[in-house]
Image 1: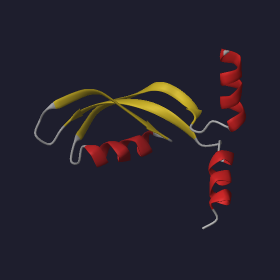
Image 2 (image 1 turned 30 degrees about the horizontal axis):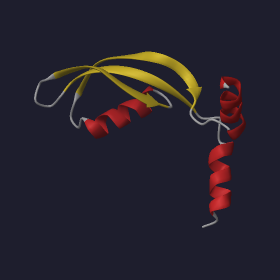
Image 3 (image 1 turned 45 degrees about the vertical axis):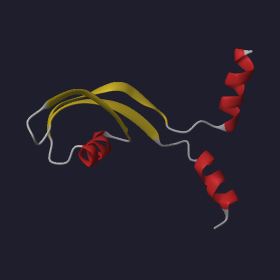
Length: 86
């Protein structure tokens, strides 16, 4: 595998946006868990991740905590943050 191409592909893919969702769930043993915050490309993706951590849970409520944001930062964005902080 050519790691250079793989790394370039990761840094160039800034079009995918993530949204943070807050969930209230009832676990399979009946305990209600509030404010589980999970990021996802959409609500379906966040619920998929939630069900990996809490199998057989019941989703009681979901809401958006923060709007979409770029999931990856470019090298230039990080460098400008460092330079501007000095």
